[in-house]
Length: 456
Image: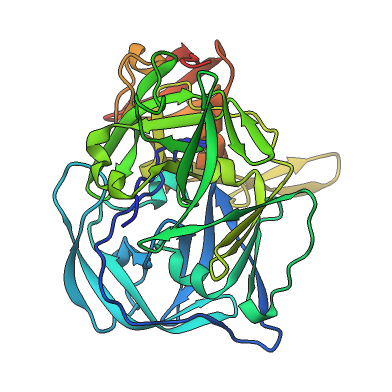
């Protein structure tokens, strides 16, 4: 089963992309295997790091797509299918139903088998995957880049995977070709697997109490930590938190508390004051069935290390990188933003020459100069739209609403920013001023508010 919570646009932008914990029923699926299709048994691919999650190129049945690399998902999933590619073949399909985080009904989907997947030079000629047709399940607006699916366990189980978060490169090795290098500054963790998901043991310090925790390794989550509240263990917050929307699950929205804890310890590595989300118990009841599980660790923490994942040896090796000491921050505005909807933008072509010429007379000469006239045209652009407003937040108090389109921020047109850059504007300091020009139902208006820290 898998968690599935694209943790919203509080990006780190943790943005809390939402990012994704997805539960899938277990099926007896055909065996498949990734092999490196070159003599070296090694390949290197570039990836995009968007809101703490990794986006890699994946070729499915000859069609080039973009997938989120999620160590917490068992079988690949393709969604937003009709927009992704009309030419993608779905082989040997049959109807199934998926159940995810949230309180809504099961989601209809297709299970396809016997497909060819390529990730760089790694190829699998008998890959199963799921297809979700629900158009509302679409991660692209939350991330601001095209996302066609998710891939995880099947790739990790066959290959040794080195993830270099600072260089944004992944190295894939055939297990027999991978040679381990000695590393005095690394930490080695034993992995446990439940339902094809990787878990490891770490510890958290809450209210000065050191608490051992078993956590899912969830590279598909943009959050730092999710912890499951437990009064008996001391995994709880009495104050210094706020209630928040945590993201969208496959079967509905997920809510909970956001807070900070004293420390997160991975053997000799200690991360101070990390952000943590405590999801409401009603949304994660199925996850508590995994013996000893206390939560998950996501991309906001994983990106602080360069990581070697060796599923065959049940090992994970961590080496701190240049992201390690960066402070943990969060969205202090109270709004979540996505790249959805449209704006009609005026553009000018300065190279267009008008039909009118202008004659200029001097003493004995006449010169003719062409007059350049700016030709105006209207262009449709994707809009940055408010998708959620937290109750009693700075944004809510000035009247911002879901569906408002953000035209300008602090005097600058939002089209000059990527979604990630725009959301980072809300990660500033307590008291920082934010001036927005928004459009609502064809009417423009301006608002001003100050960022507000709710946790220390």
